[in-house]
Image (cartoon, rainbow, N blue to C red; front, side, top):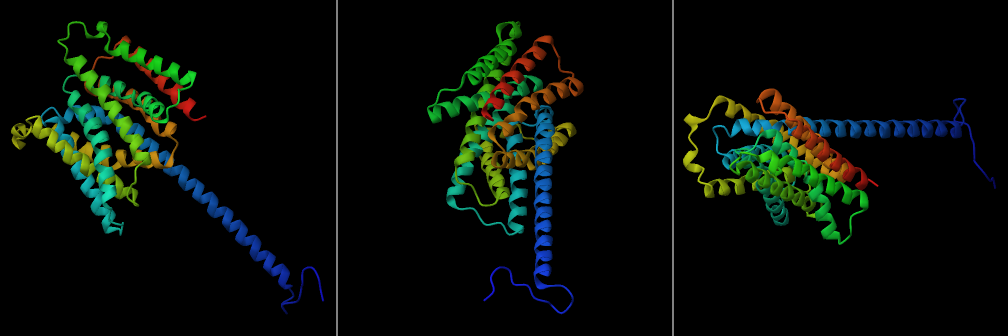
Length: 334
């Protein structure tokens, strides 16, 4: 009886052991190459998703303001999400995605209601009264609200750096909408600002629900359901707001129509889908990082394309809010 490795000739001048070792080495090298390729693809996907969320979502504040020049706000948002959601759903089903179950529809109406009606829809409504840059800066409070929601849900006291970030963020909001910034105003700016703060809380709550609630197996189907559910509820909100009587196609401007098309393609089909992908595939802190990049994009584009005033107060508030959010999200990474 032989012990150890049994080696015998193949008749080709190469022993069987050497031949098998060669194949094992090649398979090992191939496995490494496939793994490296997967890492490259995953990294590229992250870069593309973050770029879409940073750039496209930062520009949607100004696009929304252009759109509601001649289109009522809630119905404009409803059309945006219904069209985008319908396209996504049809595309996913055509590619063989599984149909959603009833529990997935329930999740869609909860998250769609919180994020798209109470969040995005209310922000667009508020832009009737405040600039796109101010709206973008106030939406930067989403991560602050997320910390509060998590602390209440988990019944855990936030760390000192997080509490400092909350205090700093509150100070930044005070700089933006404090009495000095509203001098001579009839209250419409304050009303719009408070609405955006409430919308930011609603979006943060919806994001937390989306992380834990049962979703459709296909991410594309899940995103589509959220948009369709949100669009249906926005349609109802538009009815309560008396917007159907103001929906006359002959009054829509070309600028509003192009802005709506931009929101459908870049804001919803690409931007919202990229954000929901990041929610599932990135850490909460990184997924929230867009909320201190988008405001800077919104303020810059509002100044560049819409002639919005860029004051020292606005720049100071932007720096304070960005610092607060950065302090919080980097702490949450630990």
